[in-house]
Image (cartoon, rainbow, N blue to C red):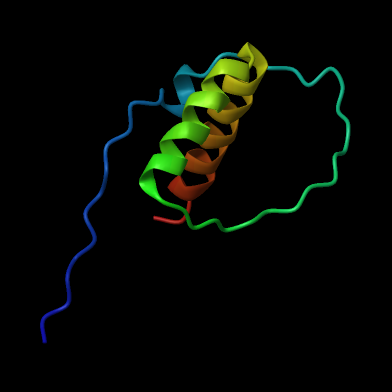
Length: 78
């Protein structure tokens, strides 16, 4: 059986040379439980809608920073 060669995905995120400086001015630890959830599509859509209604700008920044850091670290594993 022939092995598949993984395809490289192109990112819309800026390269590491294009990133602006971001300084951490404070941090706080939060305890949380990570869960893997299974649900109907309609339930997922409803939760996404609710999340968009209550998400703050800081929530979106946190998601973007986390994704950027993950992609940066993954670039060293190639």
